Image (cartoon, protein in one colour):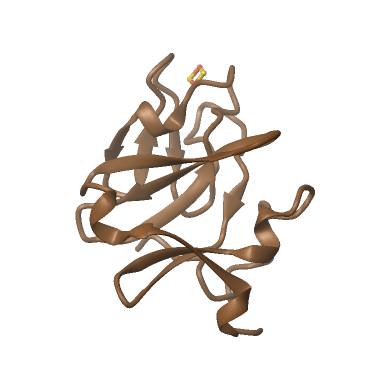
Length: 131
Ligand code: FES
């Protein structure tokens, strides 16, 4: 695991994302990323595209460690990107952290084809777990 400064890209001050809200990181030619902030100031990053029919998760309702999609009310876990049963599907996660009050995304996850994926990265920096 590396934690060099250049491995992380500054996105926005933490206060730019309201508690129980989200903001979008737009990327030219690539899927947008939704940054979510929980009531207790945990930050998560998911592709801003619901695995059901592509709804904008950033416009959903954040509650506990989940977001409810605004289109058809699927509920997704913010830490895994997985839909809550009985729905099935997973949205891509991105490693995110807050350093000195600034939200940062892992540079390696922003390259097409990369990302935290579905499993296997839980021990890496920037992937929080919901209790
Ligand atoms: S597009 Fe998200 S629940 Fe249908």
